Length: 465
Image 1 (cartoon, rainbow, N blue to C red):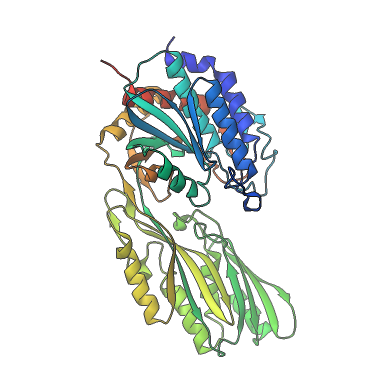
Image 2 (cartoon, rainbow, N blue to C red):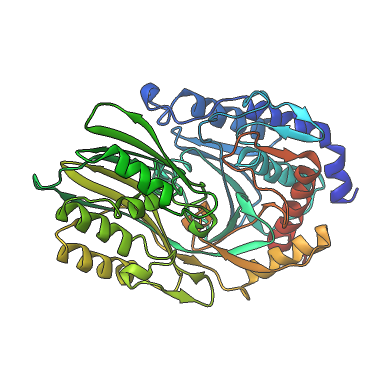
């Protein structure tokens, strides 16, 4: 039987497995950490369930103390497929139960359907199709199942201290055709205490995560004229997608304002409208103290100028991965101190310090302190490498679509191995509902992805001699 037909014959089994896995709420739960459950009981259950499934399908499996696990077949050098079973919290706005795995209009809905339970199980059933077809392999194929991808990668740190690192492989956790380059990710916290002359700004709070463009910023002011602020708001011109309003007058001296923008992923700040930055720009028009103006000027001029680090003089770019991006993700200002966090995605041919040192120099000159709170090195596999070419060939053979390799600002487990790339499951032009309400994977795409992964494994690991 041809592999595609074999995968079609497993359709009901694949759908059932994806549904069952989605129904496990595998959100990191730090309140219920224990031995064998370093990220909580739901994550542990998802890992154990998937490893049990792998064992029932006839594969060798291993649980590495609850941090991660793997499902393996074949002999020889190691080909890695790196997926993850943890999910982000469901959030609000769902039209169906987020862990119900409901099927509506040919789509499986639920948190993790697309990121990353559906694609990970597609890889597992691709392995099963090859095993059932008795196709000889020249490599071990290992599906590595992580459990902390959404929160910090402590799973991979632990797993690769205990287990062999594949030199080559792919992460089924992004987009098709092939993502061959992932920019470096640098999160910096920049802060400064205030003197008593910081008199009018009680608080500014915008954003919750460095890697998200803030769509809301709350401001409380004191010691300023209500009528003056209201008139300034009436006269101020905000761009489309941005609004501001006075939402309460808590007392004669305290006024609360709300600025609203448009959210976007931090790697693509140009796709959003940063409410925190628009708040800063408006506040600069008010009669504040000199120190308040200087602090707002610093934010507006340096992290607030452009989307590519122009303010800090780090608007770097290269051919493999394009331009650097900079997002002001969190802004917290009180009468005591200012703190903000920026998310930088820098091109793959540059090093961290080429980005960090110019920022540090500017910040220190303005009496701000700078701390690195997260960093991932850039990652790049050449387009003409055997890995990329084999995956492009598999994608084209199965889908009939144009194969090409491209770069992203995001980060996947592909960075965890020397020759790793991200490969599927979102097809060009399809909606990407990762981390959104009503996340789904269509059944057609689930089966197509399984077929692409099966062909990719054959291209890389089949023994054709």
